[in-house]
Length: 315
Image 1 (cartoon, rainbow, N blue to C red):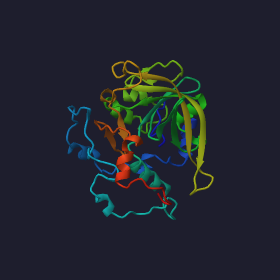
Image 2 (image 1 turned 135 degrees about the vertical axis):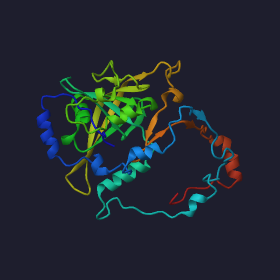
Image 3 (image 1 turned 90 degrees about the vertical axis):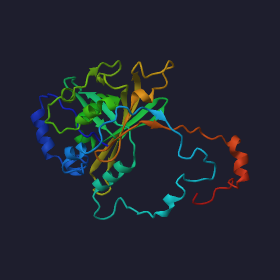
Image 4 (image 1 turned 120 degrees about the vertical axis):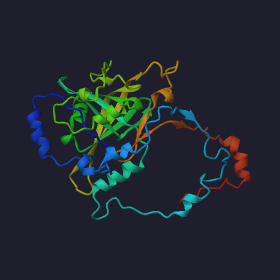
């Protein structure tokens, strides 16, 4: 997903920016356009829910079926096979593109939140924005992708900074500053600093000019490698998204979360928050471990059960 909102700080071209912004069509992820919040009175709904459980600790559980063996299929006893499916054509006549957006952000979950910090080319302003179209795609070199709804020509502040400076920091969002990270999606007037609005703390980096978020347990300094712009199929000629491929050049891990070899971060301390659909986030409080099966260890069993069969068309 694109930035839900970019942090905006004082800039001499603020008036010009407002004119351009007013003339531009609504961003795909603009709240009024998407209508993510399904509750007419959210605070009333929230008040009816249980309080935050501070005692919920990270722990490991068994899988649903610890006795699962090759050939057993799903662990729900066949319940999921009783339902039919609805075929959806993303380009069906009359189907707004925003329907595909809402569908995909509610199904391709959980997603990491790329809390991106940048600085402007002249160094006079800095920005913070959450991107839920963020992912790790390689480790050698460390490669990440982040994408922004809209084309290069109408990139918002954070993405504009990234394109112009070739630098950013990806800060991983944890439970202890979720509200602050979400607050950067506010549609504040141009020129308002979201570092101030959120109360988060900028910390220096070593390889990029942008600040990292001090409260983040893990952060990655990144350099822009290349971009790829995508064009709408529903409206030919309209640029709908720009993908940025980033190389991680420095990692920052909180000292109490990283192990001695500096290769594992403790999930009990990281306490990452996942992006789900709409306005929904998810806590990561439970884990299960499943070793990858080894063919040599399972070959005899598979043959005995008649599971060693050649691939056929459709498999």
